[in-house]
Length: 122
Image 1 (cartoon, rainbow, N blue to C red):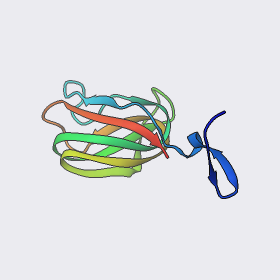
Image 2 (image 1 turned 30 degrees about the vertical axis):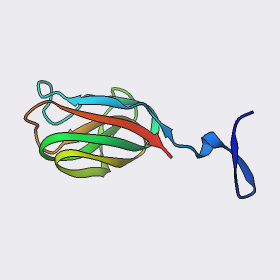
Image 3 (image 1 turned 90 degrees about the horizontal axis):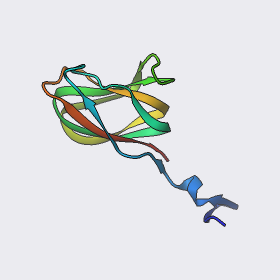
Image 4 (image 1 turned 180 degrees about the vertical axis):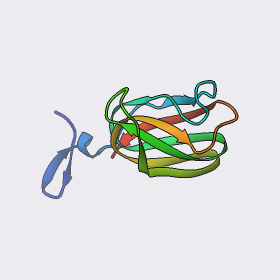
């Protein structure tokens, strides 16, 4: 029998109130391919939030693009823009249930940049 917890008069499985987090993954802006955009990232599930560690950057904003399917058309996620400046900071984006994403910077990067991220649903 699984663990449970009481919320009001209801017994809720503990998994239902624990965060669901994907594995951390490193993704690259490879300037030999594109100096301001990553390749498609499959988070492995549909998540509400994106935890992201932003590396040192050529000063820029960081934003997200999302698609409904792998290889699909990517659209700017309007609520996901972060004034990262020169980076070296961590933040959380509201992802709203998207699985397929790309990370973009508002300025071309002078060198390859590795972002570390994971999807999270609370």
